[in-house]
Image (cartoon, rainbow, N blue to C red; front, side, top):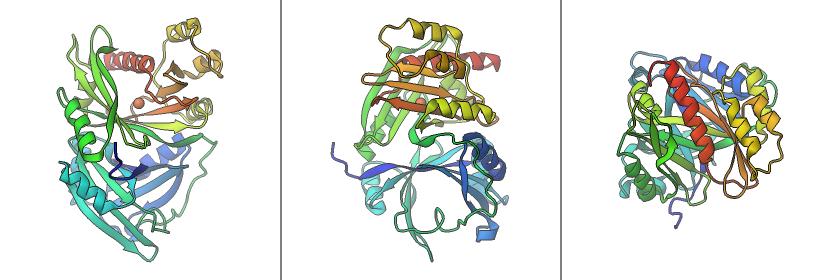
Amino acid sequence: MADRHNLRGYDFVEFYVGSARASAYYLSRALGLTVSGYSGPETGVRDRTSFWLTKGRLQLVLTSALAPSTDEILSFTQRHGDGVRRWAVQVDDVPEAFAEATKNGAVAAFRPRRLEDAQGLVEEAGLRLYDDTELVFINRERYRGVFRPGFTAPRHSPPAGEDSALACIDHIVGNVRVNEMDAWAAWYERTLGFDTFIDFKAGDIGTRFSALLSKVVRSPNRAIKNPINEPYPGLKRSQIEEFLEEYRGTGVQHIAIASADLLSTVRVLRQNGVEFLDVPPAYYQALRARKDLHIAESIDDLERLGILCDIEGQGYLLQLFTRPIGDRPTFFFEFIQRREGAQGFGKGNFQALFEALELEQHKRGNL
Ligand code: FE2
């Protein structure tokens, strides 16, 4: 398919949170990120404060409201709790990408705008995504300053600690309601020129209690991959339904961050206090019994660190998932290493994630 937008790859992900400073401290320490930028009253921004955390090509922004009038942030966190407000895609020509997307049915969140200061120019435009999320087209190539106008280097940046080997965003997952997944997959195809390359149907992922449907869409250059999940009717409330209820709507369920060395990542993050979903010992017994699994890592090491492993067409995947990061059982992180050119999403790992989440859901009394 023709790449009409010339979408290059993920840029930043911005979370709206109760306290940007506290979240920035936790996430920078927990994930080994550097606090690279700050925005707030000292930089001329009076209604909100933001921290820009980076490592390699990974960029997270944490923003909270400073005034009761900052309703855009306060109404978001009141309804959803801490969560992903927007994620950005790098494009060459922001007005053109915006015009093409809106011509094909996307709804504008904000029209193309130019943010300028003495350090240069940032261009951006936003589309509405899911209930209360935004997809941003951005071009920061002509900006030489810190992140974007309104940001400055932080006064104090604590050392990032031991190298967590995190590199970039691998994929961003949306949870939507029953009957909405196909519509959103079609939205990505129509407005952004994506194609659907994985389709988990009824019976692929689930337990005897609950299940889900999932499609994965990707950009023409494959740099942007976005799974979309919807609940599938079952005996009990599924984890996607729990998300939709606790988040009070549809939105981003998890972000997967690619690691250059997942075993190091997990060792360092566990030392830093990050909590991961438990993997049952039976998972590793089954892994040892697989005759088709030829991997460089020892299964003992994977078991010690609680890492999932799945063969995926060519190559294999190492993955694992955190517990929810905030106070509600909603958003979490995944860490992933694609070995020997693996492209997919690990149906076996997806199933293991589904089962582990269902156990946690049971503990919360929400199953
Ligand atoms: Fe994922």
